[in-house]
Length: 420
Length: 74
Image (cartoon, rainbow over all chains, first blue to last red; front, side):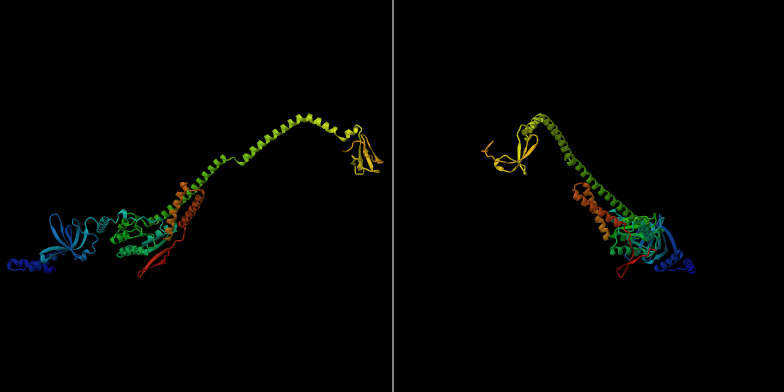
């Protein structure tokens, strides 16, 4: 190649000696050869302007600095892998080769690689995509779905062999053992990771039988976590009908998955802790309600008891009434006794007289005045009528002092007091 | 899924009963009935949350059909 170039310079030297007439194509071909072979592949720092992406997939733009401009083209095979978007004003470092495009008489840089200046290509891509998705409203809080009150079946999109799944399972087992887990195993880094993560989220949505999806992987470099910054992953999370928790990496890195998920936490363990906390909060709430039920019913009983006491006061107890009656009765009794005593006292004298009178009426008193009393024996019936006896009857006659027994000699009918 | 629905329904019912009972507007008979219902609901809810029978499975998809495989945690 060096030979060829020296040949061309020799030809240039010849120009002064002999008159050589070029056609435009010939001179362009020589210029092309000189330029392309002189510079070969170069790195150029510049600012992008007049950027145009054609339907063919090729990019056309101008690289410029303060004093000069350079046309540039980046063919689709080269720009296909470009993570960020080229925009006017972007400061870049390009790698490529200078070439001459004959039909336009133009030299240009054919860009093979491009990276943003002062910032990593991926970082730029991240910023650009973040801006785009934010503009579309993917991070908007109005699109955030509330997590279920208690997710009894949790789907996890992660690698089955990673640390994330172990961390989550361990915390759930210890803190919320009522939770079933469905793991959808995917690769979480590398070329196929993004597509597999998307498939995992879509599958769990199709499967339907989970209440919550955790998208997770353990910590790593930002390159390791890159899949979670891919647009298809962000969109799959956004489109999930089932609420999502993004739990990627360890703290520092916020991924687009984090921004688009309904809830994001810094570590896989933190995602599991959300569920454990939900369970504990619910249990505490149920306990508080049980307490409230108890105090309500206790209040009801207390009120009833209070009413009862009031009613009891209003309604004299039967015992009280009994005692009252008893007292009344005692009073009456003592009254009665003293009344009786009084009455008896008054009548004592009269009674004595009456007794005397009564005594005077005794048959024995009559006997003392000389009367006697005869009885028919053996019956002892007092004889008042002479017709009731006959001759020979045995009669006992009682006197004031002593008595005698006699036999009837004669019955006289009409002597003494006569019956009418 | 079924557990989740039942729990959510039960918790709503429990809240309603707690409010009804604390309002003091119910008679003694109804209060006791609601109290019993409430305590039963609270017990059911706690039971479900404290249950320790969990399954860990792996979701597989073959020819568009889902299947679950047991996951060995060790």
